[in-house]
Amino acid sequence: MEQEGAAVWQRRGREQEQGREKDGGRSTVGNRPAKAAKAARAGRAARVRAVPLADSVGVTTEFETNESRRLCERVAAKAGGTCLLAFSRGKDSVCAWLYLRRFFERVIPFHCASVPHLGYADEYIGYCEKFFGAKVERYMDPGALQAFAMLVYQEPGSEAGIDAMEIKPFTRHDVAEDVRTKYGLHDAYCAFGISMYDSIHRKAIIADEGAVDDDKRMFYPCFDWLPSQVVGYLRAHGVKLSRDYLMARRTMAAVPGYRNLRRLQEIAPDDWLTVLDMWPMIEAELARQEFRRRAFAGR
Image (cartoon, rainbow, N blue to C red):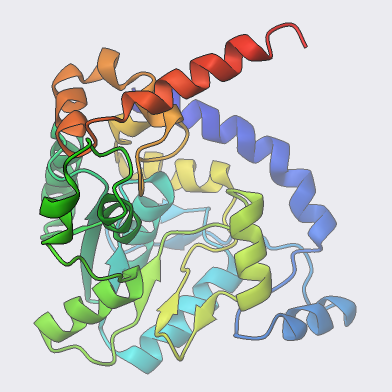
């Protein structure tokens, strides 16, 4: 399973290699993208090269980049020996967890679930807890809970019960702040496993905002790693991928979408029933996509 998922991302990494060359390896460390542009124009941001270094568990790697290393060193020096990690179960998130151990004595992960206690998700979280020797704090996904409050995919007649819950909007930054409070770590930064080469959207985020936000105390430790580097790093450490990658190219987040749902019944039928418990009308999403397929067939 993990080999199947890894192969997909390695192929994607090779396809995107030329894209990074066109970018000129621009640095996005810092809060202002203008700094990166100036550095590129001055010729100081040549293409990022992998640097072989021994990691915290004694494995020599050739996947780290100069910029990601400098970023993590800077944050670690400023924030101390502990950081938080928004853990999505995805490959970039697991890679970030591995990499952060090079710079921080302690990494405190938290996970935001679209559907509480899906069997395959709990299985993978348990695997990672054992592998890393750390507890993963559990929360609901902010987007999923807000959609639930707005009656998305809910049965008629459920309004009164859901409204009585008085669900308040919140973000992952609010979750991170709750974890800081719980552990008494006001100055701890929160890491997010996001790579600018994973999608156009993520590339735009990092290009606009940079790889670290000191005001929000957040950063992207593997922001400039190609998918092939991420998967290679996971393989070097012998880390498995989540079964999410048998269903889609991303882990389930916010309201479960078609790409995650279409194979869930086949791969994890018990979890499909769990999804229906929270989103009883989610089959409407499958029906919508089937209608879309038929309506545009042959065009």
